[in-house]
Amino acid sequence: MNQPNKIKEIIGGIPYSIDTIGMSNAKVICFEDMVLKIEKQQEESDNEHIMMSWISDKLPVPRVLCFEKHNGINYLLMSRIKGKMSCSSELLENPMHLVKLLADGLKMLWGVDISKCPFNNSIDNKLRQAEFRVRNNLCDMEDAEPTTYGAEGFESPEKLLQWLKENKPDEELVFSHGDYCLPNIIIKDDKINGFIDLGRSGIADKYQDIALCYRSLQHNYDGKYGGKVYEGFDASILFEELNIVPDWNKIKYFILLDELF
Image (cartoon, rainbow, N blue to C red; front, side, top):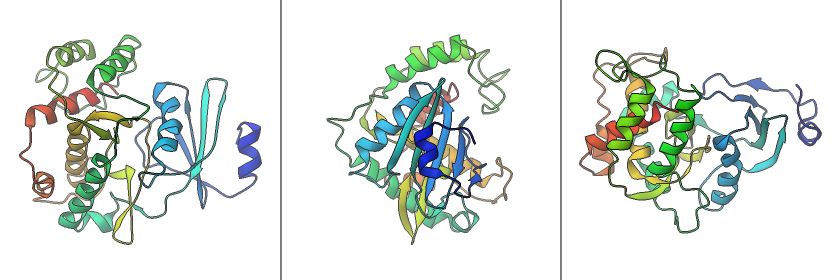
């Protein structure tokens, strides 16, 4: 592996494996007690180590061991959170319990004081980032939900961005993970042991995380990622566990917004 010298000094010749579960464009190298995340320098990857350091005394997250930039690439070496991803088959087999754990995680996030949070990821800032991605042809239409584009949806990412700008909902700001999907929530000893992949974290609307959690539950149970299909699962049990009446307009909005990332 070719990394900056400071990273090499720490990892040496320690055995490793390559993570293949995550959906991001980063290369993730896993050691027994460390993880090295390698990705192109951009706002999201620049933000991650800052947010992890800020939130480290408030939530269970990886500890930043070293962060280096080299030739437009970010290298983030962090401690490894022990436990199972919440998309593990063992957890998926018990949906009521899994959803309770995910709801507990959301409540943990929302309990964080955002008054000094270093990153604002509210809708206007997300739309600014989305516009950059659209203009630079960085949006993957092939990976979108079936109804987002085409005859039943939008003509293009440009049209979707325009709709998002014209239909911004009111916001209830909280601390948000930003990508609250099952692989990013780690469970150990029957409780949440950590949150990972925090590049999109910061101040945002509550439904940023609710919407993506709902979508992630749907797809992990319907076999979209190649796993077992669980017949009869209803992701709306998440709302019962959170004791909320779902705002379907916001759920739709934040899922569509995520299509541009």
